[in-house]
Image 1 (cartoon, rainbow, N blue to C red):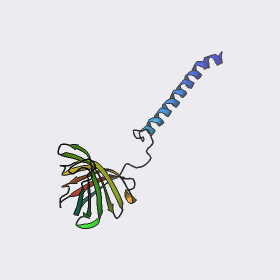
Image 2 (cartoon, one colour; image 1 turned 90 degrees about the horizontal axis):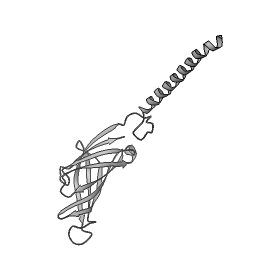
Image 3 (cartoon, helix red, strand yellow; image 1 turned 90 degrees about the vertical axis):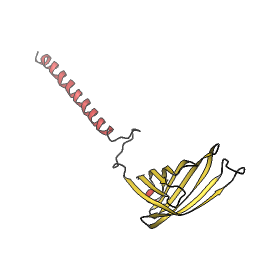
Length: 172
């Protein structure tokens, strides 16, 4: 008789142990979920670091090539280069191209690709650029050296003028 009176108690203890184990697994699982990104992969690194670089473009040289039929047409290209200046000091050079990819009457849109070479490495950027744009946000698509894992946004102002400048917010 003594054994049969203990069985309900043992079942309750076993059930409570099972519930505690499940709660423990769920708690560990949810703690791990807090360190995952939206793709479900674990993020064991520190938060992304943002680096801000503000530069001016000086001594801009530009050449436009009329590659298709005379006048604006798909494929026409602009090629440009400049000296890159930070706080009045030359820190590198930049160059790029913008190729016409869309025409609508007198309006053109170009695919712009720019590389800026600095002492610590290079940054690459790209965007669609309307022909009348005087400012532009470009995606930072990568780089080399210290910028090999770079991503972020570069904002350009006063494009194709002596006051052209850029602010890059680089995520590492």
